[in-house]
Image (cartoon, rainbow over the protein chains, first blue to last red):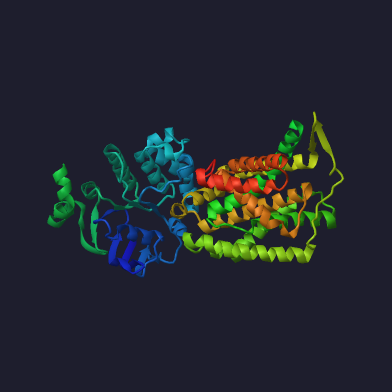
Length: 239
Length: 290
């Protein structure tokens, strides 16, 4: 349902994406791995409409997304949890979630979506009236995921959801993603925590230097020699 | 002497409420669009002449004319956004301020020239039948019109607060002010939030102008002075709180009145600039700023 073909993007003269082709099929969890500066966030930015690609196509159910403003892309069922959460910190949990359902698509189902978010993250129901800034990093990440879910997306994109979060909460977030996926929402996940991402994902792509250099099933890549050396080595040593 | 000072403080409060109202519009536009609308004072002036016309030609009571001036200013704001400021916000945030200054000064000059042409350069004010009424409290004299103006200003600020905290688009405007990219990713049409914020800011300017025309006086050259006053109040208050902006307006009004009473009239204008510099040095984000 999401197809990216030969996508090129650049910031000024420095290329960020040099011909990326990948796809996400309905109901899938797809992970995108790669070192810092590989172009992962740029790729998500291109899909969400924040970054204008130089060339190539971003197609969603056959329709080109490149000419659309980000808020119209949300309206078509693609929601994003940006890196660093980017919540509205001076507003309450409830207001943030309500704003997540701002588009017509989200508003039509806002009541059910809210119940769904509170069922996934019960702590948010208890703290619904609190100002987001007063929450812990992990709880803020729950709000960020919840805010994106409020748009009733068919594809949920997440940029580094486990960054700067206590390990036990990372587990809670990843479990929630699996749960969200079971309800039929496809997930496209950029994640530094490679082992966790590959365990969760059905498929994964490896992005290096703005190009896809590897692709495979989640468990398959988990045992791939290059992946183990480049991404799991240091982690494995630490463990 | 105490009576004199108390009377001055009272008059300062009454005028300060209008500063607060004038500043609220500027603060909203600056906080949301990240552009400095230096023509804000001219928009206040237009609001004043709007009320003046309604009174002079159609004998509409100035307080009742708010019901026409405010929607008119909303439309004017939407129009100005569509033809001028909508292009400014397309620029990156660094160039936005510079471009907005150019556009704002151009607009200010044009509106000033237009006002001289339409209403001459004379000072005008609206004199109603109840214009001279006062309430005496002990040795203090409270002009009824200015008291009513303060009440209206406070009601408008309270209304704005409710709008920004309860209305769907009000929340979207605040979200856009906080992080416009996150707002876009959340599904908010940020351009529309900009348009609404600018229109509401212009409406607040129009209302402030109406209240100035009835309790005080208006002239085509009043714009710069009011832009400056509003800017001082915005700097003092910081961005993000409309009630804070109103309180800061009251404070500037009182500070001006007291310094004028103690040091003499000319110092009225100096105190605002002193506040401006002191706040920028000691607390750049303002008293109530995020």
